[in-house]
Image 1 (cartoon, rainbow, N blue to C red):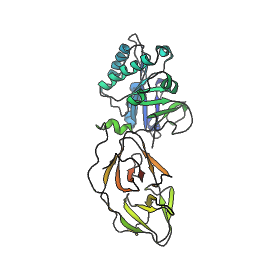
Image 2: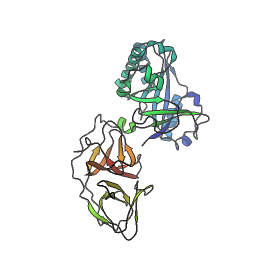
Image 3: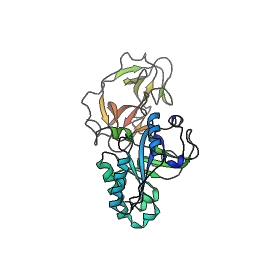
Image 4: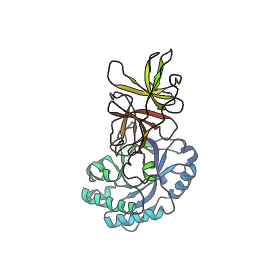
Length: 353
């Protein structure tokens, strides 16, 4: 799973936010830039962009371009930025944009201290703090632990969609994107971590799962024709099939489709998916436990042999746990906030009792 967005500054000019909102999940807005002589400068479009994005229902984050050469001026710049945010609501972090050539000579230790000084003020005021930088800065100018300490956003203009998934929380993949609602080029970004949930939740660590029983699976039997097994509950993308009159175990429903688990021929492994044929079972189980992911993305597999990946779950996200099969957990979860559901097997045992 990932979310698609843009980051914007006054250089992007006038924007048709109603059109843009149809194509993005979020926008990161530049508050301005801060230096060393009480010369912090507000981006000319920040206030306009914020009001228009909020009206269009777009989720919002912010960034500050920083070329401070001391912890003192970095803290002062952060206080200035927080003042610009007074009365505003953010769905994503405030990012410290650190990559100015004028301060590159300060060295890794000093630059890292400046980032910590800036972000400490951001966090003191209740915002999530992040770091934006190009790959060269992350590799050569910042302490390695910073991308673990703060949510991270990396710029590296290469093609693809999942280049940095699992390593950085967000990837700026292009400065020449073209999207309806924006005239000319625009920076485009992929967010891999569900920060919307993390920021709106009070949970810092995975909560203990809710007590409950696994559903007791019931017998499901296919009819007189071969039955297709699907990846999602809207019954698209075939991942397998079951012969006529073959048996499987039904672990629950996802709307009308049933979640079934069946043997993979010639192995001791199992596969899970959605089927449309409801006459094969009278009542699907309803009991469940809650499974909650840990601090890294978790791959979801269609099979317990882990040969076919059907998705992934963000850090700290929850899913319904329907059972334990071949020492893996069968989970059911929604796709990117929609009413479409997926199911599959996960390895992570810490999310369940």
